Image 1: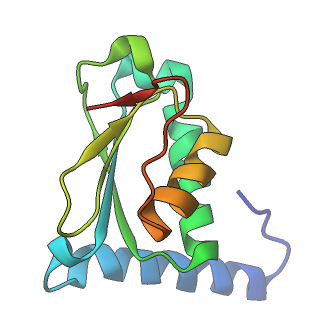
Image 2: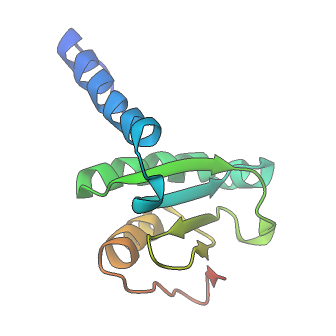
Image 3: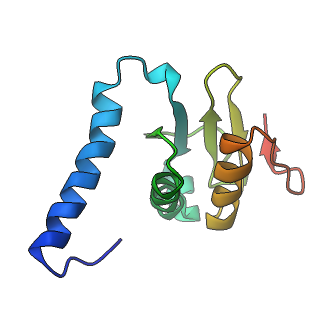
Length: 126
């Protein structure tokens, strides 16, 4: 997270967070947006899911991807934490396991933006 050094920084941060909140709360049709659910049960948090989610939200913003990020409980893939489910409008949801920041970037750029299924040592969970 960025450090706030001035009132202008604080206002910019507030505006950015408000825009993200507006997408989540005011979307008339959230099914038309990319939905990313991050498993945040104890095992997911211990494996770094919180940091991956924060990184992914920032990266999606940088790439101009309008996505709704939500936290979920256990998805039942404790052996593959951190896990996340990505639902692109018109496609079946895909669950990815063993997600770190590099893999999150790859999921956003290759799968979300280009529609290319991301495989890495069979760590894509269906």
